[in-house]
Length: 82
Image 1: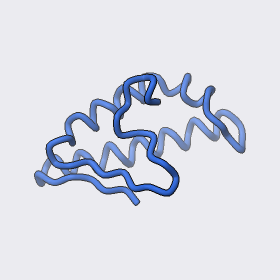
Image 2: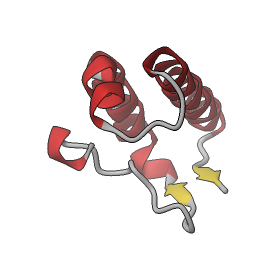
Image 3: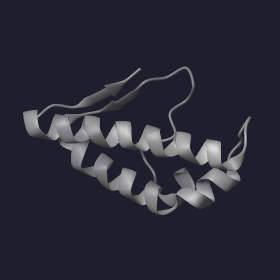
């Protein structure tokens, strides 16, 4: 995902995603960037189950990040995902 221009994702398995209030708009742009390339990401990353299952998991995670960032933008805060 870094090769696609992502700055916030992926996060190491033992780390937290932290987006400061000043970077929330950029994180929303990153979600859109990754969503546009979702099929390629799903096909090129490891998956313990089938491709459709993996892709749906990515869709859910990106949507969760998007919802958190939209809420943060409304209140002028940041996002932390543990």
